[in-house]
Length: 276
Ligand SMILES: Cc1cc2nc3c(=O)[nH]c(=O)nc-3n(C[C@H](O)[C@H](O)[C@H](O)COP(=O)(O)O)c2cc1C
Image (cartoon, rainbow, N blue to C red; front, side, top):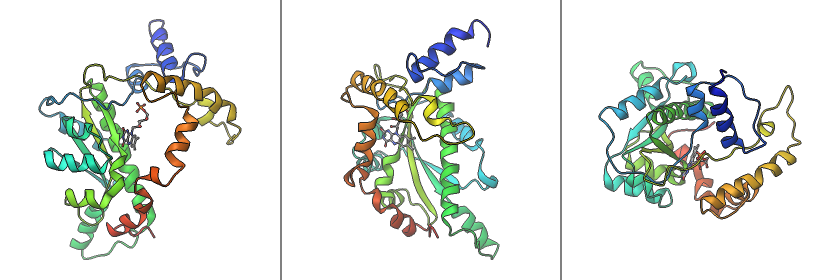
């Protein structure tokens, strides 16, 4: 790292981890600076993006690594206002789905493999397994994250919409998905509305996630250090001064908070993922 990069790196690490919790600074460049500056937004300008933006994001997405080059993912770009409104409803009335200029639904998609096997007059014995669904979901996530980084490099912001999994069968119906394709999440892309640029959200101290040689489950102190940082962040963003611990428990502590996703396994089976 040269002398001019040091202040930028230190500021970015402080923003990400909080003062006093920064990991050791190391190599630094503009790509790492972009990654560390990530933040989601839920407030978008509706303005259309320059021609070719969608295709550029998809080219970035397709450039991600993909298991065995199987490319078991697809993406549906949804413009139709009525369909967007239904998707927003499925996702618990997330209005940004209707407002953002680009809305993408990333799919775990093994249907292409099914079609090519049918054309070849063969069956894919390895397809009906949980492994295929996991591979396809990982592929979709890696592709989407490349699109997110590409978007952010263009000054755009995004937010993932996992809440489409509240009802994957309804989403599949709306998007005319063939058997073997299911939504993994949506992604809103656009310019942030004024004042909605967001702020870098602090993450757990590195010691909670980075284990050296062997896993160390003795993380109570790291979580305790993180809780007030997240409470401060929440208070600044009008989400109430709840700690990370309280948020994890609220998110996972009740069946109601799953918003129907407790039925996901049955829904995936119905959509053509036997999950054996
Ligand atoms: C797979 C996935 C699904 C998500 N689903 C939603 C969602 O439905 N609605 C939402 O507002 N944010 C959603 N998010 C955004 C996260 O809440 C957000 O990334 C997290 O709070 C960290 O904040 P940051 O992205 O600003 O750093 C999702 C993120 C991921 C990775």
